[in-house]
Length: 177
Image (cartoon, rainbow, N blue to C red; front, side, top):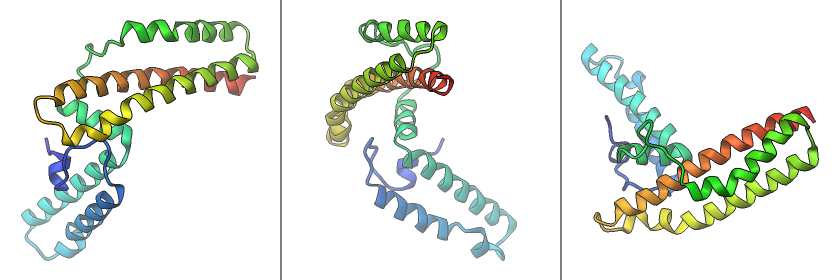
């Protein structure tokens, strides 16, 4: 599998300089544009097409913060299926939200929807504030400390995905009420 960071000659980082990423993407888009290689041998054209596709996939992945996070965690084998348990303290924290969602199933109430939304946003803001220094400092960490930081990011990622599911449920109730 291609290392997208290596492909763009960028350090592995959760927080990328978007302008640099875009510049590298556009430069390679021009370099690997099939029209510039139309007279090349078929084998070379296939290689160029492959590189152009890789460029698009790399950019799509790295330009989206959530996809970039999943990509980095995946590269370090931290998103294996069936091993994505959410910490129990977090589940206890959101248990009440889940109970409110179940009540909304029976009895839709716009006030409860708003209340749950506010609470989800507050939890998400706290998560974001807590992980920010880890994300920002990751590229400068020595290799032996990175696994610990990656575990923190993994936990954050799983919690965010859980909150996303709650938000999706809330969106259904919001359209009903």
